Length: 158
Length: 185
Image 1 (tube, rainbow over the protein chains, first blue to last red):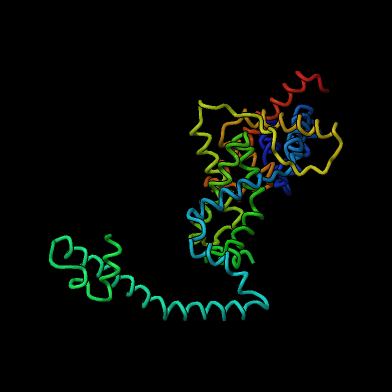
Image 2 (image 1 turned 135 degrees about the horizontal axis):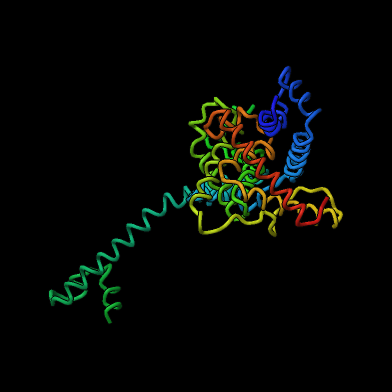
């Protein structure tokens, strides 16, 4: 084995522990008689150990936070945020009490709300009709608005 | 076990994906830091690697290990960063403020020595071209086999061998020059 081949093997397979069998014996035989190749091997081993002595590193936590933000760009939805806020009330021993309260509230509002809304809408629409008639000079408050709304409209306008 | 976690992460389980991140982020960041030479780029690469991994995890067939797959993404993204900033910013010293090295040594003198070594390693790796640097980082710092390096970089084993040889020649010369400058034996 000549120095050129030996150098190639030292810097690759030998240094990385891949050289075996006859090739390894040949190289070792060459190294016994070659100062310059022995020197190269020492330097190569030293440089490699120098690199391997390098400590392990960890990225800062901000990297994980940024990754999370990028893979979930919208974050939790409004419903998810709302549920996160109210979920604790439905856990543990209070669960039954809060469920009952919520169910009652839903039933009460479910029954009462349509009536309240229709009444309000009716009032507003009546006031508009009566007001338009009065402004147009089509009668007095009682004749146009009727007994129920006439007084209210009159008070409103006056 | 690995396949199970991957499947869960694919199904949107963030805890599973975080487990993958915790397992491999040190390795990905280490490669990126050695390749790019500065913490800012390394953090950007680490971020990009895991975002890309999250998007592509469904396409991961398991032909190589997850680690090898992540190495490949990390190296390619590091090379992209190096090419993008070529001529804009030189390879910097990797030992900057804020790097959390898992170094159990508490002794100040040893820590200073370790930091000086880090700086020298950074300088030496900065002398190599990116392809040689990738080979040497994967082999010497990460301990990958020639076969895994070839798979990771998409080259054949002889190319890996040649790049390692050239990289080590450069490194040995640089160390010799550094010893002369520092007056070391």
